[in-house]
Amino acid sequence: MLAADEPVIRVAGLAKEYRVFDKPEGLLASIRGIFHRSSRVVDALRGVDLAVGRGEFVALLGPNGAGKTTFLKLLSGIITPSRGTAHVLGHVPWERADDFRRRFALVMGQRNQLWWDLPAAESFRLHQEIYRIDPTRFARTRDALVDMLGVRKLILQPVRELSLGERMKLELVAALLHEPEVLFLDEPTIGLDVVAQHTIHEFLRHVQRERRVTVMLTTHYMKDVAALCERVVVITHGDILYDGSLVDIVDRFTTHKIVTLDLEDAAAARRLAGCGYPCEIRGPQAILRIDRTRIADVLPDILRGGNVRDVSVEDVPLEEIVAELFRSAPARQAAQEAAS
Image (cartoon, rainbow, N blue to C red; front, side, top):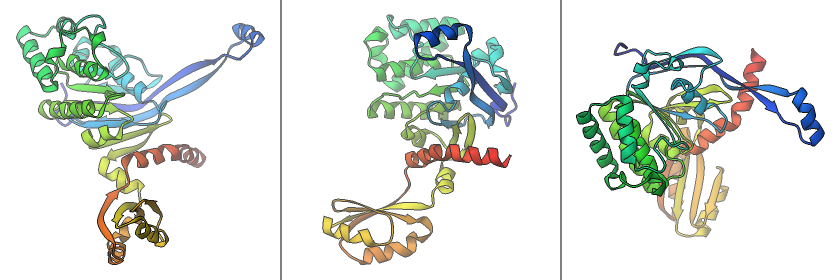
C-alpha cells in the first residue's frame, strides 16, 4: 500500500533498446543478407527519470518515434526494459502481478479492446468476468459512464458499425469499468472531430476530478493538453527535454507575445509593417510579435496611431512552442554530448 504522499509512478534510469535489422535492396544483396545480416541498435528510451503523484494529469509530448508509446508500454507491463527500474502503484509493471493489472487501464487510440463483431455490451460483460467485478457495482459503474458520454443507445450495436468517435467513447467506458487508479491514454482523440474531442475532454476531466485517477496522456493535439493537463513532459530522442507546468513552458521557451490588431482597412494595416517589429499582414489585420517585457510601453504608442478597431494580446500558441522544442532537440543533444 502506497503512502498518501508517495508517487504513484516512479521511474529511474528506464531505457529500452531495439535491435533493427537492415534489409538491403536487390536480389544478390538479399541473398547475401541471409548469411550476413547487418543491424543497428535503436534507443527508444535512454535512461528516463520521472515521478508522478496521485491524481496528476500529465501530458507526454514528443515527435513520432520519440519513445512516448514505448514508455506507456513499459509502465503498463506490455514490454520489459533494457535497463532501469519502474514502479507503478508499488508494483514492477513487467512482473504483471494480478493486483497490479486490476488497478490500471491502457487505452490506445489505434488499437481496439472491444470485440469488432459484437455489441460493446458483450465486451463490457467480458470485462466484468476478467476483473471479477461485483454485478451491482458493474451495473452502477457502466450506467454512470455510458450516461456521461451519451452512448447508451450504442452499446447494443456491433462495434464495426460505429464511427471512430463512437468507438473511442466506448473504449473509454470499457477501460474504466473496473475503476482503475491509473489510466494510460495513447492518442485517444486521434482522428476525431471537434465535437467528439470536446465530449471526451469533458468526460476525462470529470473522471479525473471525481475519482482522483492518475492519468498519463500522449497526444499530438495541443488542444488536448490545454484542455486537460497542468503538467507537461516533453520527450525527444528517448530523453526528457522538459518536465514542468504548462504555464512555465510558455514563460521558459518564449520571449514575446502576439499582438493582433484589427484596423479599419488593409492600407492602415500595411502602414504598421514598418513599425520595427516582426509583422504579418492579413487584409485589415496586423499581427505583431513584441517582446513580452515591452508590451506595456509599445502598445499605447501603436494604439495612439488610430484606426484600431480591436486588439488582442496572447501568448505564443502551444503548438508553435512545442514544435520549436522538437526542432531544437538535435542541437541541444549534440551540445550536451560535446560537454560530457
